[in-house]
Image (cartoon, helix red, strand yellow):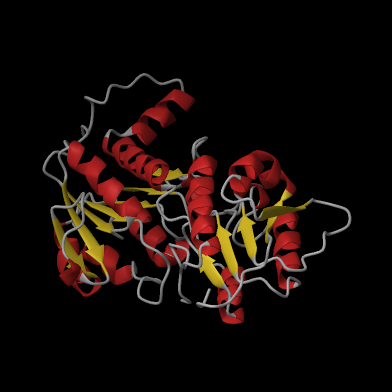
Length: 340
């Protein structure tokens, strides 16, 4: 808020009724000026007059996807469009590449994400997927379905990951935690970021720019995607990228489906160029029942749930409350995002 401009007596916050019930006391504790404006799933909408702030909580999104959004989410987003004084929106997610968020930025709203809140769960999911592939769990699961006892000592045994090279695209909070966990298993970890000159973040042994991707791929056993969707990363893992990977390489994707060219991924898996993949995200979600990914051997399909954690909502609420205090005090919220 510019100097000399008086703030309204009340700070009205638009929020779902579920979010208000769960986090209301915590949010009101930020300042006596805070007034919550709950939005229910059905019935009359409240009056948004004077509301400058909106908090998009995860309960609005559960049951939907990026491409098939929950009606509650759509109702809430449409309601925000009718709030004439709205200035700042906080979302539960780390990614803000969905069109509804880009529309908010185009409208001139400030939009902040919850980067860091999901890092522990997403990183644990990514590294669990990596180790499941390394230890041949898909093979074990198939044998269990077939009631077949076949020792992993028979055939090609699991390879030690100690000393293998993991390339992690994305060096934000999620990428850093993935790197740290990979190091704990003995992997050598390179992080890939937009500006390599910014230095090596925690969790990595080395860092490189995206322009070095093709030069690094021949040495990579584990390609881990944890980067945001941008014009740089869109479709960056294509047929050429898969061709450059060495034999027995694997892919772990906990970022966005559109970062990978899925036809090229299928061809690499079916042709044996890629030994396996853990896939939490897809170009179109939910993944169609007829998608070939369900049946590809050595592929683990996860329903875009890498961030699922009972502690996540509280971490997101803490970020919002800290930002709300900054907003009331006339400072810009942290984690502001820019248009793609």
